[in-house]
Amino acid sequence: MYFQKIAKILTCLCLMGPGLQAQVHPDAQFAEGILLNEKLDGFRGIWYANQPNKSEFVYKYGGGLGTYTANHNPLAIYAESVKKTFFCYGAENEAGSLIYAISYFDHNSQTVAQPTAIFDKKTNDAHDNPAMSIDSDGYIWIFGTSHGIWRPSYILKSKYPYEINEFEQVEVTKLVNGEATIMDNFSYLQVYHSPEKGFIGLFTHYVDKQFESGKKMTRVIAWMKSKDGKNWSEWKDIASIDEGHYQTSFFSNGKLSTSFNYHPYTKGDIGLNYRTNLYYLATEDYGNSWKSADGKIINLPLTEEMNAALVRDYRSEGLLVYINDVMHDENGYPVILYITSKGFDPGPENNPRTWNLASWNGNQWDLSKVTESDSNYDMGSIFIDKSGDWVIVGPTEPGPQKFNTGGEMAMWKSKDKGKTWKLHKQLTRNSEQNHSYARKPLLMHPDFVAFWADGHGRKPSESRLYFTNSKGQVFQLPWKMESEFVRVSRMKMK
Image (cartoon, rainbow, N blue to C red; front, side, top):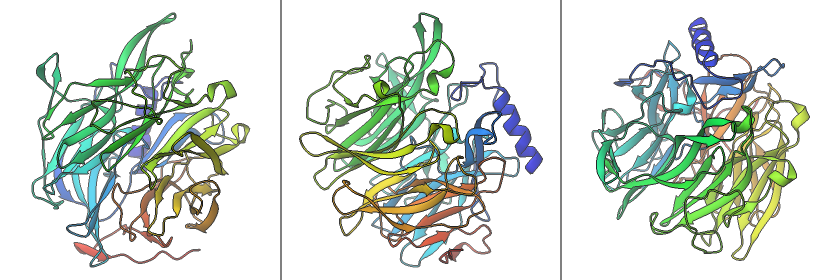
């Protein structure tokens, strides 16, 4: 399996240019995905790496990325009616291919269900990881994204409500100039469901744009909606500034908030690595209108760097921006968690990697610092717990592969609405591999507030999955299962 994985990684990396982490050579051929509906005998995440370099850190980023990316959302949802937290992730088979996997934690029995391998995506690219949704009838939807335009995307639906054993592929369309057209490609999807209005999704699509040095493929962020999950609206662009964007979002109480950065135009290949500035927009009427934090209606798409959605001009400060997560506070105001750094290459020369918070107070953005870590890709999640504390779970502490993706997981708390933060508890310690990409459920139970994967940051490795409760007690999902349901045991700190 190790050598198969190495071969697949080399194949993928050879198709990438030195600065094109988002693109694959257009002549590359990829197989269609395969519906599986098979049981897995345990929880094993996908290992993935991107953009090799000649430094001791080996890759720009890499590791156990079964819960990657920050722009796929949600990966977990608590269903109150059945007292279960459903969660999806990127698993892998013996050939190293990405498998859409799903399981759930049963809060009544304190057991985890044997995961179902829903779909073989026929790639080793963790950018194709799934996101999920649950509709008002309890059907579970899996949205299989694609990294770029060279592989198809898929939507799958559970055959029965609140059950994970069998899924079927959904044939979907979008409107193009008023005509229903097959929709088989979308990237970086964040999808949410309202009982009254159906689905709304934020995503990326790729567009060739003419610049003075020639054409470049750019990332345009957009939105779409659907009442039934099968027939989708026209794609409507949110922003297309220079070489494009990454966006991260959150949905609650009918409000959809999105925060995004942008890639300034450059003559070389650095554009996709040069991401800066912090922007924010929201809709409270399912996309009919979009507003800045102060309530001003914004005409879309945004095409200029300086606009009314700008939270902070980090480009003028020479800093890059990596957005981790978004939440709404007790008043429904947006809160954005993000990292700033001096450059995209891994290593100490681009320190500090500063964890920042931008929170709207009703009149202006309050900006504060949480902590520092050692990688641009130290992704964490932010939420409010039952006591009203603001909580961050993320790999803020140095891990065994320092300056690579992830580290040791920690729980931070703020009792003053994000103004100051304290390390509440270190969740993992003395690990052999880095832990990365802590993901919160869209709806949350205190038993299951974040889950993530581990993996070696510099070489292919096994990848295990974990979750934590609100007390900071960590549980490793079983690598090997002998039965359909297993009671999880708390992981002992080393």
